[in-house]
Length: 218
Image (cartoon, rainbow, N blue to C red; front, side, top):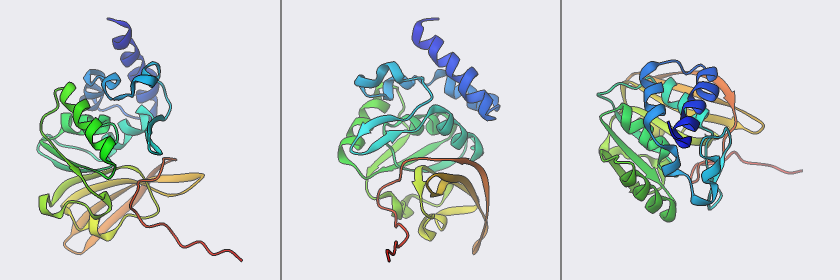
């Protein structure tokens, strides 16, 4: 086992498992997707650390445990078609693609979009539709989806995204305001109804393009 493989093993054992990610298929994905392929060269030494990594343009890679928990808690199946909002570096995209049939991933920043395409090609991930677009409106032309994953935080989940779930489909997002936000799982229970439950507290950078609450100053 080389140094990077050892670091990946340590990440899974010391960061991922303690965060209640125990599904063996999910752990296998985390163990064999090379995160260093998705980390900017200036931050290679941080590839397997429990920290946000800057991608430029005010964007960040989430800590590995947060990516892992999002992927775990949306309960993916091998036959699922998934929509990801916020491609970023492409790392979470790769994790989702490894666990499902097909991923549509939306990124608003042209440079990040191009970098993610290169990263995914280098990692050998092929069954992904990368789109340069505002993720807040989703991708209705490619839906409906079995699962939707938001890779950053939002004030609230737009109804337009919830409408793109199949009945029985799940959407996971980090919702709320600093300092504490909640990872929240939405499930479409019928053509006109959705359940939601808050799963765990965390904090994450904002996704661009989503509406923010009005702020009045007196």
